[in-house]
Length: 419
Image (cartoon, rainbow, N blue to C red; front, side, top):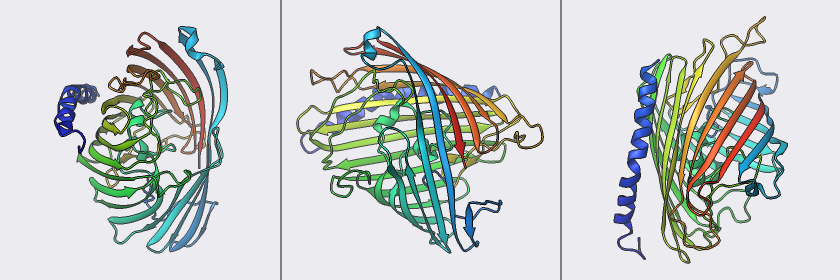
């Protein structure tokens, strides 16, 4: 770094000290396996062959409309009780209430999606145009997911868990930009240049982020696939203050176990992400580990890192499909849906371990940085390919920092409708 000539070596030492955690996650996932464009949101623009009353036009020129909502009630408790302050211990909301509009015209297409749910809506989630310059390559311009993380590219409509892992706070978010994708059957390459979120006042005037992601599936097939991925991202001259916070397991309650507070004068932010995933028979594994370094003109440089390991298993004879061309898991389509004359749907159970270390961001008295661990259990019932019910419980504990010893428990029930 310009202001810290020894910054690169300090980052490498920090990565080396944290790397065993990521390696351990991969080894645990391997042991579990032994026992048994539209790019954002991730389905290609190729027209569907299924009948769809909300799709209009021909194979060459069409518009399709897809509503999507998630409704959830939840409960939160903590020790000590003062953590919640004025937060109600029960609440409910429409987590998402979106309308997706996809369109295609020969080799061109795009997507617009608006969210009327949550606390701030309506917000523009996606607004981009695609050019499929050949069968394997796409250029995408507009508001889109950053090319960095499997969990963000899978999207909320196909997510394995109710919320992303706690390392999501370290990852670049959806923004206005231009990206290039290239994918074959079992590998993908993506890179792009991005500004800020389109919902910000100056999406193109508040810094620049350059990101690149590569994935490879050494084993790829209808019954078993293994996914490896890596990504790098660099943000420069960011004018928008940036902060990093932990998670209590749901966005329903605005309580963060740990937080860095605001970085108001960010010179640059560098991040790297490692991915491991697998779909073998009824089992699915999804894991990521993220490293980030923030350099701020007013605060000390800080190295932050965290990751998750999630393992799920279908209790019914179902399997999660993997798309090697985009490096993501697909939406679950039960073999025996309830709409098929007495079918039961697909039933899945799973668990995830989370870890987040923000302890180096402890140079401001107002901060409550530190380290947190978390465990989530979930039950997913896919009644058909459009309706899903989920119940999850998350335990979070602060294990270092000013709030060391704090504990939070959240439980939510979610209804998903995905057209």
